[in-house]
Image 1: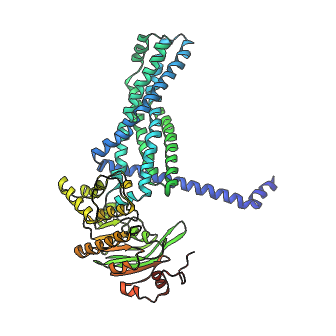
Image 2: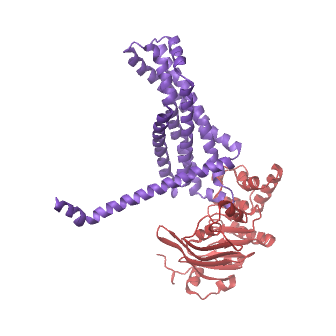
Image 3: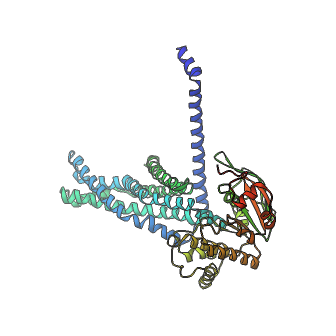
Length: 271
Length: 248
């Protein structure tokens, strides 16, 4: 035993100290990155409060993040609702409660799947594009050009995207919920023969305002996450095409993970 | 006047500026020459506060620009115009919108006045019928001229030119040099030009500084540098392979 300790501490001492040093290095890098991200979010909020940018810029971003995501939201929502209808029907049928299908589909969509899936879809479609756009502006010195004109790049590039994402995400989530509910109705009522009255009546009874407001709160905060990580990764993109491509990948992965982690914490608070 | 005192800057353990001292006199054109990759663009970015030195002091009109708050730094930047090496045009905007952008954001001119100013600025740099084109639809030389029109538009007190004529044909190059010279005579701004155009640069600039290994090797009037006996400066000006400057 003492030989083993001696072996690791002295003979392999270099490797052990190297390992500990690398843990320290990565921890410091991680904390520095975290601090920089926090600073980026705080400064974005400060600029948003003081100079939110022109309404035209914001409308353009709402069109880009919101309106152009409609197709993918429709498609995902319809099939999510249909799968929920299918799975829900066979599960509820075991207890003779097929009439509760509308409630199950609606609650699952409004409280959880609508906000999360719509945010993940927007991350893939718009979040990556935000990072790529700002990253290319960074490497081609367009952001530097704005600064040399004594203009704050945050006002033109960052805050309009924040505001647009915060407006667009709850709207997309609402559309996702409605389309998903009708997807469940299509499978449950039209294909599997659930009573249409029961489908909507039970849903109306079970869904309360708190369910809807928690979904809106979630999608609003997911909008902040998408804009925050997307803009941050682009703003600090590395050199050249490879730097932008790495930033885009990191942005999508980090946003998706953060959405799921934040969803858990928010659910535990809002429940 | 711009003054850099004992400026050091390191990127990934590479010393780019290594105790650099330089004074840019007000109202004159100063050219910075030197081998590629020696940090000439980095030097310009320090002057306008886009990069911060690891140590040293940078003053613009007697005011230190280090440790300024963003709003204070922006006040200093109001004095500047800058032409970037690759023009740095906004690629989602047309040529017209690119040139009009600083006017729209920083002045209260009417739409017609802005259109007239933009048209005149573009004509001044020899560009016509390109208003509706996007930067990726025009040549590199045209991009440089659009960038130049944008930099000159607000009549700044100090203009930084990062290789304004690199990649242009000889006629356009001459025209751009003449344009810088004429505009300078008219408005009397302070100009810093990073350039490899030797010997043309000696006809435009009143002062020339040679940057090598992160320091200013020699600074003097165009005539002094043209007739220098400093071995490295002489080698660079003559484009000779033999001398203290090694390729690798």
